[in-house]
Image (cartoon, rainbow, N blue to C red; front, side):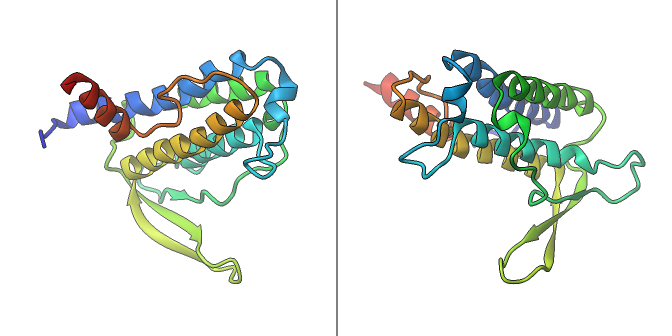
Length: 189
C-alpha cells in the first residue's frame, strides 16, 4: 500500500468529503419534483429521498456543530442529536442549500483544523439506557465516517430512485474501494 504525505492525505480526505456532498447536490435537481423527494418507499419501509438526504446532512452538520472557537477547548460530537421532520426533508431547494452550506463550512475549516485534531464522540449505545458513552476520536476519522455513512445512505436513495424508475449514476451509493475494484476488473479484461 503506497503511503501518502500529510498534505496529500489531507487533500484526499477533504476532496472526497466535498465530492460526496456534491453527489447529492447533483442528484436532487434531477428529481422531477418535490413529491418524488418526499414519496415514501415501499422497499425501504417509509424512507424517502428527503429523509435520507437530511440524515446524511445532519451527520456532517453535527461534526461541526460544537467546534470550539477556542482551539484548546474540548470538541464534542454527538451524531445522535439529529433534527427530524425539518424543511429540508420536504423541499429540494432547502436540501441543496443546506448541502452547499456544509460544503462551504468544509472549505472554511480545510486549512484551519488539522485532520488529526482530537475530539470526543458521544453516542447512545443502548436504547434502554440514556447514558451517552464517550469515545476518543479524531476529526479525520469522523469526517471519513461521515463520508462512508453518506455513501451507505446514498445506496438507499439509489434503491428508492430505481423503485421510482429514475436513473442514478452507477457510482452513487457505491464505496470507493468497490468502484476501484470494478475499474480494475474492467481494465484487466
